[in-house]
Image (cartoon, rainbow, N blue to C red):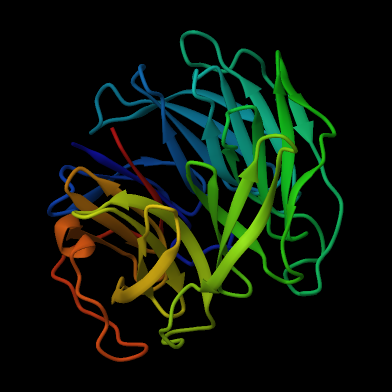
Length: 355
C-alpha cells in the first residue's frame, strides 16, 4: 500500500500557492516516512479512479484546476491532464459510482462543477459540463457572507447529489439525470443558523453532518419520498476544550469496530479525533477523544491503520486502527487519550489516499 498526500503551501491555507508544495508519498501506512514526489499548487483534495492508475487532484486556487495524475509508478507520479474547474478554491472531489462523472466543490465561489470523464478516466472536455451556483448567507458574518460549497456526496438511494454548503447552512440537492444534474432541484435540509455544515458520512438512510462553525455533530434521516432530510439528533463533536486555537470541526467517517460501527470526527483547535459508538439503529454515544496532533484536518482508515494529517503540525500520524476502535471510554469529562502512533514529516498535509 502506498499513500499519496495532498498539501497546502508551507505558510498555510490562504497564503499564495505555488510555493513548492505538492504531492508527498508514504511507502507504507505503518511508518508514514514520506517524501515529496511532485510539485503542484495547493493540491488540497485527492480521489483515485477505481480501475485506472489515475488520481484526480483539486488545486485550491482562485481560478481552480483539476490535475489528473498517472500513478502507475507511485514513486514518480506524472501529470497527464489539466483542466480549469470554473470556480474559486476547489476543496473537495466526488467521483460518481460509475467513474464517468467528477463533482468539484468550490469553497470561495460556492459552485459545484460537473466534469464528464471518458472510459479512459480522463476529462472529455476542456471545461466543466455544468457549473451550478447558489446564493445565500448565514449569520456568521466572518464565514457566511456567501455560499461555500465544502463537500458533495451521493444521497441515500443514489438519485441525488447533495452539497454541504457551509455559507448558507444547507444541504443543497441536485437530481442526477442523463448528462449531468438537474438545476435547480431544491434544498434537501436546512440546518440551524450558523451551523456551517462541512462534511457528511452516510449509513443507510442516516446522514451524519459535522458542522464546522457551531461544533455540533448532527444526525439527519433521509426520506426517499420527499428527497429531504430532517434533523433527529445533535450533540457536541467533542467534550475537549480548545487547546491550540478556536474549535473548527473538520472530517467525519464511519469505520467498522470489533462490536459495531464507530464514527470518527476530527476537531481542529481541540486537536483531537472524537470517537462515537453507533448503535444498530444509528444513535451515537460519545466514547472519548484521542490526541491527533496539531490541526488534524483530514484522516482515513486504510487497511489496519488510521492515518491523520496534522496541517499546522507539518506531520502525519499512523495509528493501529484496532487501538482506535477499542479505546476505553473517557474517565473524566474532556479527557484526551494518548494512543501509540508513528510520525512522519509532511508539510501542511490536507488530504490522503491509498494507491
